[in-house]
Amino acid sequence: MIDIDKWTEIYNTVKKHKLRTALTAFGVFWGIFMLVVLLGAGKGLENGITAEFNIAKNTVFVWTQRTSVPYMGLKAGRTIELTNDDVAAIKANIPEVGVVAPSNQVWGDFSVNYKDKSSAFTVIGETPEVLFVRPLRIKTGRFVNDIDMQEKRKVAVVGPRILEVLFPNEKNPIGKYISIKGSYFQVVGTFEPVGKGEDVVEDAKVIYIPHSALQQTFNQVNKVGHLAMVPKPGVPAAVIEEKVKTLLMQRHRVAPEDLKAFGSANIEKEFQEVQGLFMGIAGFSWLVSIGTIIAGIIGVGNIMLIVVKERTKEIGIRKALGATPFSIISLIIQESIVITALAGYIGLMGGTGVIALIEYLMNKFEVEAGFFGVPEVNVNIAVTATVLLVVTGALAGLIPATKAARVNPVVALKDE
Image (cartoon, rainbow, N blue to C red; front, side, top):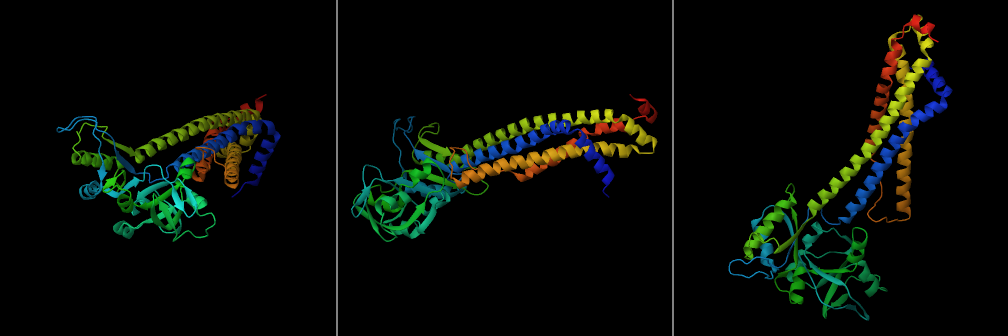
């Protein structure tokens, strides 16, 4: 049951010392405010950097380089080339690999033509499996499929920049033919890049064709430029990275200690390192904020001690009239909780409001701030911090409340 008299008394006490109460509560407010803003900004940084990973976050890339160690009668400096047989061997011998996507590119200086329009673009040969590695937003038509690969069809999926340059007056490019190095490919789909920044600009200039058609049309029979692989669920990317490189070393007669023959990139490892950075930022945010909150809580405790000192006679009269120690303790603790809860709530709302305003402005004006993305507030963490703050506020008022409960009525009434 709500004790109206007690809450009225707390209100009058706070009202009587407005400046003192406000200065005490400010430390608590500022701690929660900083916690919410710092965590929100940290999340914005995480979102921005994560958006740069516009491929599957457990992808492994493998490509060839030159050997650096003589082996089995073969000299150092030998060039190695990946082949379709390597792809088949990986699928047959390494069960941990879930997806293998061989890729290649049309090299040299050339232009892509459509009627009287022409320009230079990047032409990449891919397989349907690449969609498990690098997600694309298919806008119209379709992507390369298995039948295209089997029949080595001359089909193409084009990006937005190709549409702007080659098809400025065409409503629907599907079915049209473009010339790539003198060979005609039929447009079967258009796509929009996924990601942000410079990568999106470059991806917009890409034309995807079937990998098998690229090999046959542009004199790269049985050649593979690089491999993109994704492990099966539950398998670390480092496992397939090591096993694939070991298998390729055996197939191409490369010395086991030759670390330069094959290059690789483990996106999962890079992403985990970035996640560690985010954890460090979050830890720093908590450290700074909790330090400020603790200072505020200590201030609340000190104010409660002053309140007890100021109200010593009043407490003595209460006890002389029969007030129980519990009623004295609850009065002081409730006042402490009111100050910390109100300050914490205002800090929570203020911090959330600042983050929401930044998010709104960035979305409305489509602001790109480098690696900084749209900030977010983890409401569960913020509310939990506020609840813990209230509990801590109660503990801060416990010592002054206990001191008040121990006041001797006779001594209190003589106090000056």
